[in-house]
Image (cartoon, rainbow, N blue to C red):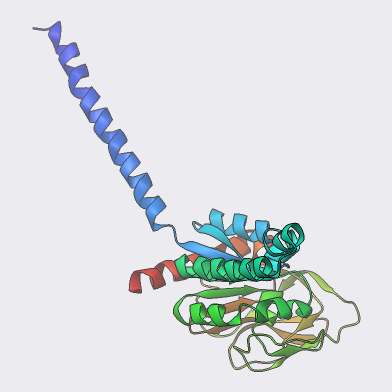
Length: 270
C-alpha cells in the first residue's frame, strides 16, 4: 500500500499539470484575441517600423496600410504593371486594386495611426485616400504623430497641398532662431487628458520646424525658445501629438499604452 502511494500521487499530478498547461494556453490565447489591431498608414513618409515596434510593446497588433502612392514608390503594383505590360488598362487596374486594399485594411483595423517624418508636401499622397480615411476616422480612434498631426489641418506654410481639415488653423514655421526644434522638451498639459494619464513628468522628444500656434482642441503646449506652440490635440476619438512618442522612452510608451487602452475601450463599445 505504502509503495503504491507515490505512484498514485504521480498519476494524479500528471492530469493536474496537464490541466494547468491547458489553462495557461487558454489564457495566452485570450490575451492574443484581445489585442487591438492598429493600422499604421504608410504614405511615403514616416518611421513606420519604430512606431509599429512601440505599439506592439504596448499590447497592440499592427498592420501596415499602404496608400496607392506608397505602393507606387516601392514598385509593388502600379509602376510594375505599367512597365512590364505597357498597358494603360493594367495601370488603371493596379491603381484600383491598391486603393481597394488600402480601404480594406482600414476597415478591418480597430484604430488608425498616421505617423510622419517629412514635409507637408506629402499631403498630396493623403488627398488620394481622403474619402476612406475620413470614413474610418468617424468610427475608430485615430492618432497622428508629428507630420501626421500637421496633416489634420487644411494647409501649411511649408508646402502647397490640402490636409484633412479636421482641425481649424494653419501650420506655421516656428520663430525660434535654431531650427529644426530637436531634442527633449517639457510640455504643459491642459486639463484632463486621456493620452497623458499617469505621466507625472511630461518630457518628450521633438524634431520639427513647423507647428500650430493655437487650437480650441489643445490638450498640451510646449515651447521652442520663446515660441509657444500646440503639441497635443484631442477631439472625440481623434488624438494627435507634435512630438515622437516612439522615440520618447518610458513616457512615450506610457502615452502609447494609454492610446491602446482607448482603442480597447472603443472596440468593446462597437
